Amino acid sequence: MIIKKLKDKLLEKRYRVILVMAFLLITGVVALISRKSEMELRSLPFFPGEFKEIALTFDDGPDPRATPKILDMLYKEDVKATFFVVGKMVEKYPYLLRQIWKAGHDIGNHTYSHPDLTKLSKEKILEELDKTRIVIKKITGRDTYLFRPPGGRYSNKVIVTATLSGYKMILWTDYPGDYGCPSSKPIYQRTVSGAEDEGIILLHNGLDTTLKALPKIISELKKNKYKLVTISQLMEEIREKETVYFEKFEREQKARPLPLEMVVTE
Ligand SMILES: [Zn+2]
Image (cartoon, rainbow, N blue to C red; front, side, top):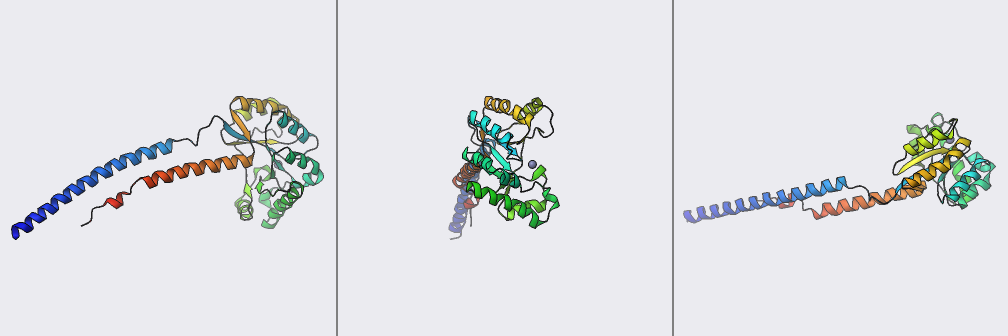
């Protein structure tokens, strides 16, 4: 009886050792596979395509002198851009906003009177944004919640106030300083050297130097395999890439057995 018990215990112990060894072996292999796939995932670029994407944006219009010229250039190059318009300019030149919209460009809100939003109360910030949103909707029929603060000046109050009302603040990654720049060459050079995939270029709607630099900027970006897209398209692309990336990550996680499930219990 005593011998049988001892034998059972040994047997039990032997099985335990085998189980523990098997557990260690499997977790080791799983850990190696997991590490490899994690590293692969980390090093995976977001769906590398043939083209890089960049968004051209024009602030401060519409302007009766410059906007038709910009639209003409964009049409000739078959390029779509985004216009961050000022509400009171839209009220003055509604036909220009209609032209922008009919040509298939994206429209964003650049406030009603172009003030420094950081100096305004919450109510005034919303008034500036809402008035322009309403005037844009009246003309285009589309409600846009994209906005860019004048001069790129914003504070926590600006972000919170706008975000709580559904607005999305869009800044930029590439600003050649066309405002106040006396010649077109540095505008063109700085824009092209600051270009990057999923970048946003800020230019102004109404300057001769910008108008002169624009055809060169577009042709150089195209030569460098950039696809020019609108802000809405860029946001959609980024969202899709992120979804694909995280779906893949989730699948990998599910395919990986959790070590906890393999713990040997008494
Ligand atoms: Zn502006």
